[in-house]
Length: 316
Ligand SMILES: C[S@@+](CC[C@H](N)C(=O)[O-])C[C@H]1O[C@@H](n2cnc3c(N)ncnc32)[C@H](O)[C@@H]1O
Image: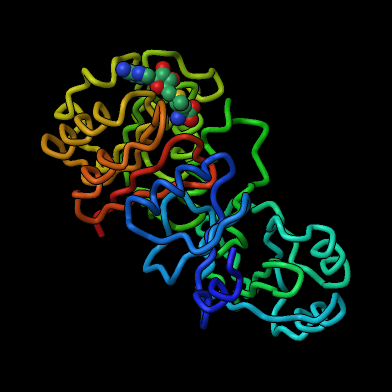
């Protein structure tokens, strides 16, 4: 690689993308489809020119990064110690031993599990740094992510929820992607064993919970949760005239989910949605375009999502 040409391309600033673990290829495909040139990549991160928004498959997007030359380890430490805020280190393939040894001499911002609170009060100014090679640091002075490096591990509730699916909704609520009102009545389709219904029941008046499979007894005994054993695709939206939200974590194709959404959007009072779009193989970017045609909607790959993304629509 011609490093002098690359260094020129990286002046005065560039963006760093940290892919979700195991979805590095999805991020590359996404960049390809949006004609975004990859200026540099290793197994842990990708460098691109300035982007307008965060790609779906990036766990974190560090914008306006700069390269800072350092002569030796202690010079590197000095540069990082002189920064105004505490730093968080992002891993790169370059000289892991040197990075570790620099880290040891710094007071670092530790990645801590998040206490679930709606919305999260976490508001900490930090900077991010990584090693580009043995002579240059990458520094992002003001990362945009509320939680450093897009890391959203929660202190989990091990007592009530029957599985870990509720963590997706916790992330949506905690990061204020939606705002629920105590008077809201919601329908949760594909709800068994009941983690989402349980999480919702703490914020709304009533939860209709629909699945062919039974709920966990701890969830079905909740007086706010009204379970019905039914095929979600046979439910008549007109029978749920009091609902204003639809939540779906159903296992089905993106196309089938899209037709379910269309039906509820056209035939009911429901105008707000949180739906998991699940993929069997690679990400279906074409179907995502169709979801994106709904006004007031957005698609996010949550930290808690795996081979799936979350479509959120809330009318303000
Ligand atoms: C990933 S699980 C949902 C987990 C749930 N969100 C929770 O927090 O516990 C997907 C659910 O979709 C349900 N499902 C799949 N096809 C369905 C259909 N046609 N009608 C109703 N439920 C369906 C499955 O029975 C399964 O319980």
